[in-house]
Length: 110
Image 1 (tube, helix red, strand yellow):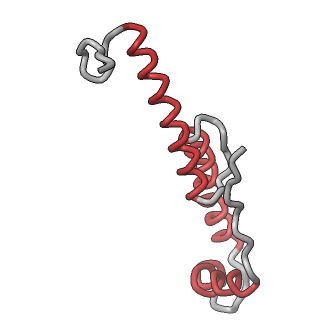
Image 2 (tube, rainbow, N blue to C red):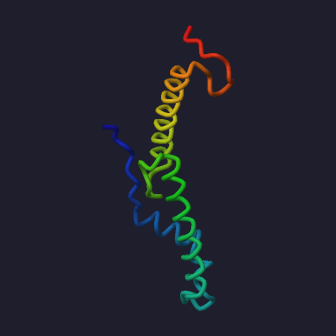
Image 3 (spheres, rainbow, N blue to C red):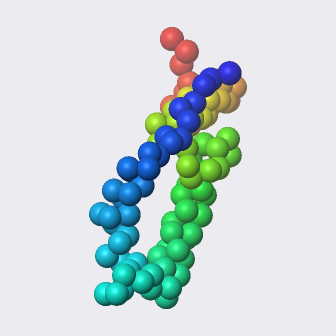
């Protein structure tokens, strides 16, 4: 069985840097308090994006993966494996019917 890259564990410094560079100005008001209404909007956007990413991952991997937290490299690796299996299946089916499904010509094994 293939080993896939695991999601990267974030350091405290990476979390702090992300907060300062991305979220602090968006989520804090001028007094330094969390703007709950803005937080709700950001969480809604994140939730929507996360669900779409899960669906995309599921589709790209023929249902083998469905979590959005897989590293992109892993998702692409599984996707390539799926494409290879599909390609092998199409060639076998073309051989059975004697016709190329891509161009419509008679299938020639030579």
